[in-house]
Image (cartoon, rainbow, N blue to C red; front, side, top):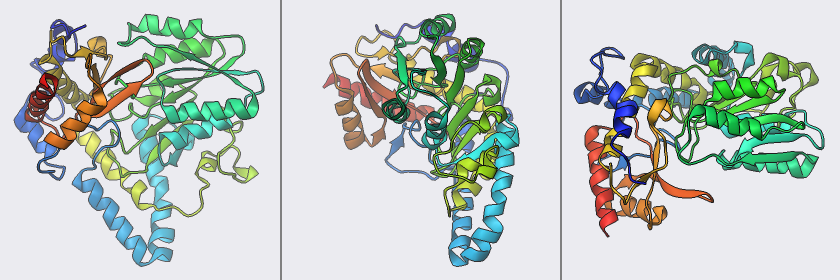
Length: 410
C-alpha cells in the first residue's frame, strides 16, 4: 500500500523533529546548521552520496587518523610498537566497550565482526542430535549458513518463522516466536534490528519470554549497538554479537562478542584454545598474530559516539528517515516495508517498488546519479534499503528523492 501520511505523525518525526526540547548538546534533530558541524567530522566525497550505512560506515577523520598512527608505528618496529605497546592496550579497549554496552568486562571478547562473534556461539553451543534452534527467515544469511552447517554436521533441527512485512506490533511478534517453540528447542537466534528492513524487534520482551520456557537466546546486534539508544545489556540475552564498523564507525574489521559468564565454559571456540582458558572470554580471540590498530580505533569511535549522544544521534537518524519517506506519502509507486510507529525502526527504511526490480533502480542511482543505496532481494519480498547517517543532510535526502522520482518515471 502507499505510505499513509498518518505514519509521519504517529512515528518518529512527529515526536522528535518538532519537539521543543533539545538533545545532544542542544542539537534539535531538524537543526541543519548544528548537524552540519557534526557532519564535518567526515571527509567529503564530492559527487557521491552515501545512503548505504547499513553495510559498513565510513569512519570519521579522528578514527581514521588514530588507526593510521597505530598502524604506521606498528609497521616500523613491530616487536616494540605492536607486541609491547599496542596489543596490551586491547584490554583498555575491552574495558571501554564493556562499559559502553553495560556488560561485565570478563564477558566481552574482541572479534572482527558479528559473523565471527556469533558463529563462535552457534557452532560451539552444546547441542545434541535432535535438539532444535529457532530463528526467523529474515536473519542474516551468513548466520543461517552457520546453522545449516551445524544441522548437517550434528543432526540438529532448525525452525525458521516468517515475520510479516511490515512488522506487526510487539505483542504479536512475541506470540509468533512462542508459538514456534517446541519441547526440543534449546536455542534461539534473534535479530535486534533486521538488516533487510531496519525493523527493530522487541528483543527484551522476546528474550524474557523464551528464557522462561528454557530457551537460551543469542542476539544478532549488528545493527543495534550505537544505532539504537538502548543498552545491549538491557536485552538480557545469553549471547550478543555486533559489528563495530557499522553504526559505531570504528575501523573496518572490528566487532564484539558478549557471552554470559555462566555460559562460557560450555561453548567451544571456533579456533582451538588451551583448556585452562575454558572459563576465559579470551578463548574466542585465539587467532594468532593480529593487527591492533583497528581495535585501538574503537576508542576514539566510542568517544565520538558519546560526544554526539546516543539519544540525539537516534533522533537525528529518525528525522532524516522520516523526511525522505514523507515525500512519498500516498505515492502508489512506493510501498513502505518498514513499520516506523512506536520506535519500531531507526535510520533504516526499506520500500518496495511495485513492478520494478530494485537492483536495476539501485544500479541506475549509482551509475547516473552517484547515489548509493542497497537493493534487497529476499524470497519473501524485494525493495530498496536506504540507510542515512550523521554525515547526511536534508539536502542529501532531497537529492535522493528527486533522483528516485526520475527513476520511477522511466
